[in-house]
Image (cartoon, rainbow, N blue to C red; front, side, top):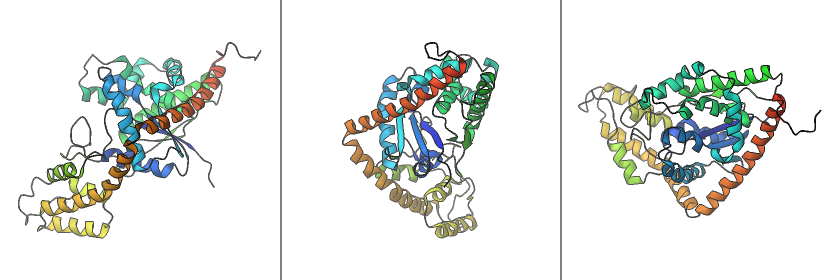
Length: 338
């Protein structure tokens, strides 16, 4: 049996989770929790870096994200689910690591640059947002995670964490910190229902795991397809068509999906027929998730107790690492060592 590894992953609590989250990370977490030691972080401190004006949204989303986790099958008996801001060691580690990274390096992190552009900050970038790659390094190293499941767009963040680990271990002549490895899923990104490159809460192009059946039906009906497929008999494009991308991600009958693709490509298959099949596939997938979510939502106190216990376990692990970091740096002033 291979050695059990540690995984650190998580989500920003800025709303409910959607199908893109499931494809990109949630499905993998459900599988990985049976193989490795997994920590899943509700990253409220990171969410505040660009939502400081919406603390009520962050607070309410803690419960929403936790319910989505439980509904898809993340098991708190196997996975430690915790709240980032309630683990103080993470903030202290961030402070130490900031001294190992130049401002110029942060400015040129590809992920940060892209997100600054997407958010239209210009010169008004919140300092907390600018340094969140280092905060993320603290999150990962605090739990000595060697595996970090991410989307392709987040790989530069893990590369920066590796830089921090190597510099810390070299500077302080230690092996306290563990180098993480980014692991991407085979379908790390699900397009939005509007055909945009990424499903996103902020873009309003998402199907949420908790959407009622009628809402899902409305969203599927309005999905973007091939704009050149004007008549049923016209040949249609399968590549880049979100309807078929979703069928690939969630459909079980691969032979039928392949036949539909071929039929659509040669003409004679209408968008409404393909969407109807996709709707059936998504309803079958989402219905048990919705039911489990409704059951967990009946006892919010139990959900918060689960988060409290997970956060206590996370604190224990992170504090152990922090003690080792302080010792390596020689700032454990009241220790008994000579």
